[in-house]
Image (cartoon, rainbow, N blue to C red; front, side, top):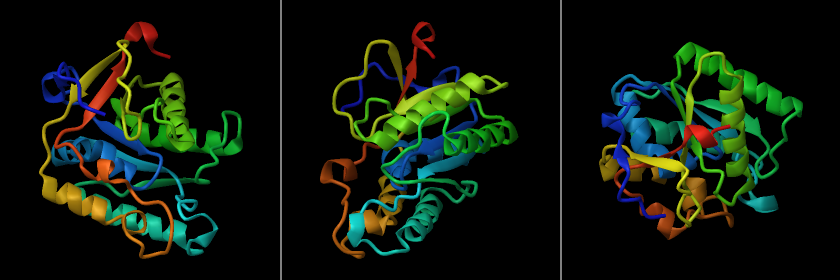
Length: 230
C-alpha cells in the first residue's frame, strides 16, 4: 500500500519519546511492516520488546520440516540482530500458525498475560501491530489481541497499526504517522535472514512476494482516532 502524503513525522509527534512494543503475527512481518520503527526505537533505547504471535509452522503445509517452528524462531532472532544490535530478546507466544484462538480460549488469556507483563516491565506507551484490514487471519487476530491488551491495561497506551498485506487505503478515522527512513542494507539483510520464507531451502512453501520485498525506507503507522477507538 502506498504511504499517504499526509503522514505526520512520528519523531515530531506526541509519541516522539514513546516506548514501543512491536507485535508481529509471523517471523518476517516485523521486518516488512515495522523494521524502520524497530531500528529507530531501539537506537534510542525505546524498544520494550518484539513479540511473535504464531510459531510459523504452517508456512510449508505438510511438506515442511518437522522442526520448522524452531527454524523460524532462529530466523526471527537473526533478523532482529541484523536490524539492530540494540533490540531486546524477542518474545514468542507460540500460537498455532493460521489457527488463532479466540477470546476466552486459555491460549488467548496466556498471551494477554504475557504481553501485559511485558508492557508493565517496559513501561510501554505504544504497541505497533498488523492492521486489522490485512486479510490473513493471524494478522487480524494480532490486531484484536493488541486492542484487547490496551483495553485491559492499567497503564494506558495506544495501538498503532502497520500494513503488510492490505492494498486499500486506511479509513479516514485513522491518522497516519511515518518513521524516519531506515537504511536499506540492514533491513534487506534482516528480511534475508528469514530463509524459510525467502528461499526454497526447506522445500516448497510460502515465499514472500516481490512486492513485499521492496520495502519502503520509512514505516507508516496508523492510529485510530479517539472517537473510534475501542
